[in-house]
Image (cartoon, rainbow, N blue to C red; front, side, top):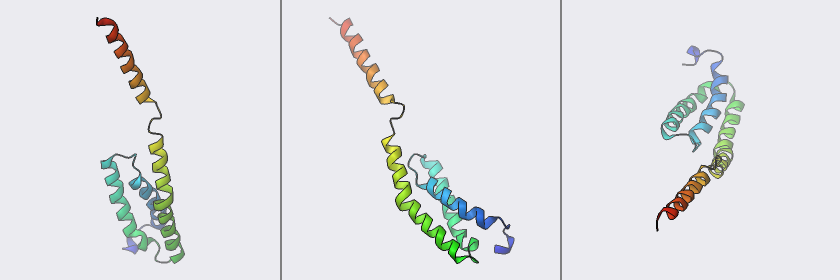
Length: 110
């Protein structure tokens, strides 16, 4: 299969496998989109040996980067995203409007 791949494919695959791996692991992505990225990531991982058959150092480097991304970077990103889930403060606005509704209701009932 290697002779049929374009010359730019190995470099593109090695770079994009890291991106699709990160996107496949993020919790902020919807399930359907996450499933697509998991499928693409698996397909790209299957093609890594074709991309690095002549360069074992590149294979080792990409493998180490995937492990670093999986066990260090993505969990930090997920924790940061979960901690900032209330960026727009929508819960506070909803709580204030419900308090205002309760105050309005109290004035109308004897």
